[in-house]
Length: 260
Ligand code: GDP
Ligand code: MG
Image 1: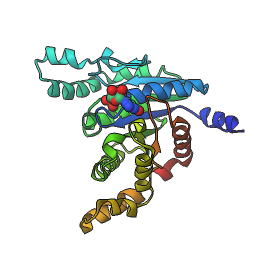
Image 2: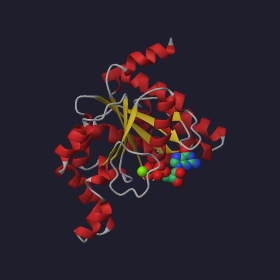
Image 3: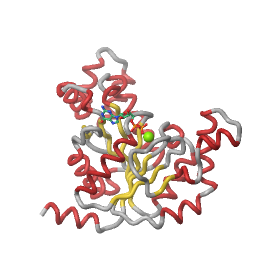
Image 4: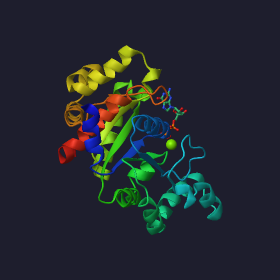
């Protein structure tokens, strides 16, 4: 029965899943592990690499932006430092928009995973990033996975900062977001449980923070009470939690606009 329901959702169209998160949060690793998971469950999956500066990919992309723009070449050609070269690379992607679009239009899959540039601000906070996201998904449905690095998230203030980043990206890209607690293999079970309790009830998080001002209290309530999904604990290196992640994605897809 469950298999049948899954198929029914699949055949309804293509879903674009943007993998987002701070540098080193595990976007590229998750892209690989999630593709393996989906293929094991007989779902067609394609991968788009949007990182012009990545040196090594653990998966074979169906579309690789480096064929059009390579940050290292941009650095040499325009005599730029690494940061300027990255910014220029993202902007240069748009100059190739029509070629890129026609290549992406050839992709046929149930799910298209989009691995985004290492530094999230380059993609999410520049107008180009938003335009590229629009270009890629076209009229198809899409959502974002925002990865929180467990090692950072175990500290309450860092956890709140990551949720703020996640909600600003949700606003910026105008996509429903599933928050994912990645790298749980680095934490003890009780540490993971504590973070999950924070995500379920603002008071738990406020208690952890101790003495804080009114603004922070309001902010924590706003963040926790408006999460667009449950926080899903996973490990991209161990493959743990992917059944739950898949189920949450299905819920968001089925919920449509309600989750925006
Ligand atoms: P990206 O910059 O967000 O694409 O991050 P990467 O996928 O390149 O991962 C950054 C580092 O974190 C690499 O050394 C990965 O092996 C490691 N990593 C990613 N996911 C996990 C995980 O679930 N557990 C652990 N222990 N390490 C991880
Ligand atoms: Mg990466």
